[in-house]
Image (cartoon, rainbow, N blue to C red):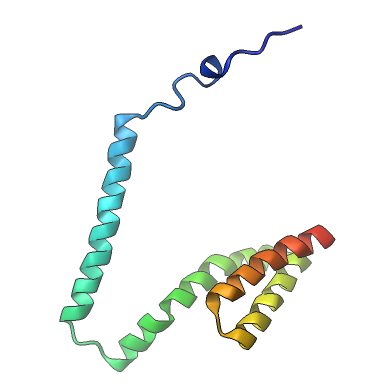
Length: 114
């Protein structure tokens, strides 16, 4: 009968913080904040054309589609059914958040059924 190692021996230094990792994470946070604040500053100080404003308005939806479209293309009936649920909920409620929640619930439900 084998004796299992205790939790500290099993994980060793896995829960310790490596200073390099902490610095990299902080650097990524700083770059993210600078990019967002810089973008907001730039938009406030530059004259936006109607066409550019329209493009910026649809950008969040385009990002969601760019992330989800490959998954849908590679998916099966469960993913396609969930996409139909998303379209129906979006069409009826015009709420992106509600449509995304319905899609997640739909894909989980369809995967359980199929």
